[in-house]
Length: 332
Image 1 (cartoon, rainbow, N blue to C red):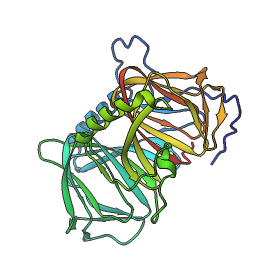
Image 2 (tube, helix red, strand yellow):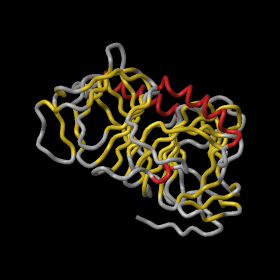
Image 3 (tube, rainbow, N blue to C red):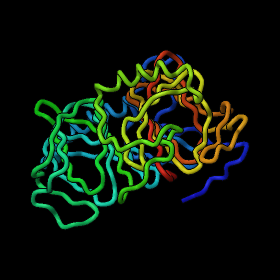
């Protein structure tokens, strides 16, 4: 992996939007979404995938499924790559094989539809052991319904299967993250709070109460955002962040960051120069950014910020809620 030189002045190129420029301040008529294809993070660039592009991907997958002679029940498209991480979109129409990943965990976010999520138990008719085992079903597992907005992480070595419910396909965002063994807790919860205990599932129904609590805490928040833990499996943590109108410019020396807009609208600045930089150890923080790209983000958008890229998140209105995950490494 490449290394980044972090000095007082960090001059980096603008954000790379997936075949789409940042929206203008006026937001007029939305442009037609660009074709969805894998975008690899480049040096000094963030990558954005819009909600419109995700909707278009689902439409294309439905059309491809209808036209196909051999029906694939699960179409997975990798849309962001930042070594060694991939953000994928899965369009699930029927029953796909159950899986076990030997050396990685899998984070899933339900974007559209509902389904049945089964975990634990044992694979039925398993393939030969390897990095990824599959089976025709799961015996003795635990099944629960999942709906839009639910998110969960499957630890390595755990059988799992996700089926769409009758009446419609299931659209899922997935990130596979390397993990082997029982690692220690995330340092300070990954964001300066208490170390997080394992939390493998977060229901969409729980998010409004989390946001309401965060809103009461926001006025006293030292870093201009408040929130809580959505998912935790050391060393990974998905945090809920309610952003204020002011943010802190930050460069993560060792981590990249995935962000997903749960609700509202706001701005994520990327690149440029950190103003009044202060080395805090893991990060270089500053008061603001000069020469940055202004990325206007809304509900349903994703952004990936590689290691070493300055960034700052802030709201322009009353609500800007993010799900964020720091990942070790994460370079082009």
